[in-house]
Length: 220
Image (tube, rainbow, N blue to C red; front, side, top):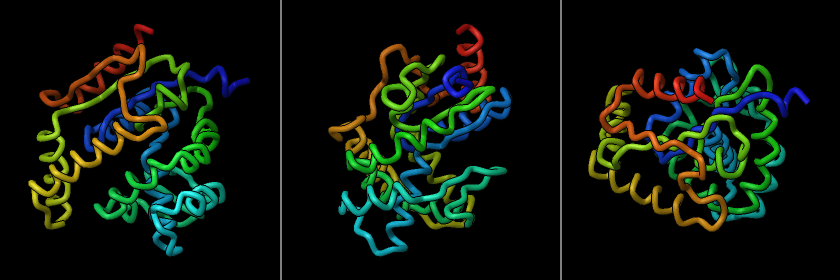
C-alpha cells in the first residue's frame, strides 16, 4: 500500500540532456528515493559484455536481466554487490545500453524491478519511458531535453574533464544515432508523454532546471 501511495516525479528525455544530474538533485532536496533507469540498461549491457552475450541476442539478454542484483547506494551503482559506477559510464557501454534497450523482452524483464524502487516518502525516476510506461500515474511528469549540439558539447566537456580523449563531431553523431534508435523503437519509444511538461535546458543552468521541477511538483 505504501508503495502505491508514494508520489513519483518522472523525468524523461534523450541522452546527455542532464536529466540524471537534475533528477538526483531533486531527489536529494526532497529526501526522495532515486531511480536511474538508464543505468539498468547500462548494467545489462555491461553484464552481457562480461559474459560474452551479444547485445543483439534478445532472449539471452532478457534471461540475464531477470537475475541481476542491482543497487543504488551512496551515489554508487552496484551489480551483484560490486561497484560498477565508472564501468557503466564508458562510451562503449552507453552505445550498448541503447542497443539492448530496443529489445521488448529486455524492457519487459526490467519493468517490475523499476517499479519496486517506488517507496515512501517518494521517488524521482529518470529515463526514457518513466512517465509513459513505468509510472503512468506519476504526480509530476517532465520531459527534459536540450538541442543535440548542446548535449554533445556537455558530454564532450564531461569526458575531457575526466581526461578521456573525445571528438565533438563523433559525439554529436553518436547522440543523433541514439536519439533515432530511442524514438523509432517499437516498444516504449522516447516521446513526451501526455501530461508531461516540456523543459528545454539548452539555455538553463542545472539549478534553474531543478527549481522549475520543484515548483511544478509543489503546484501538483
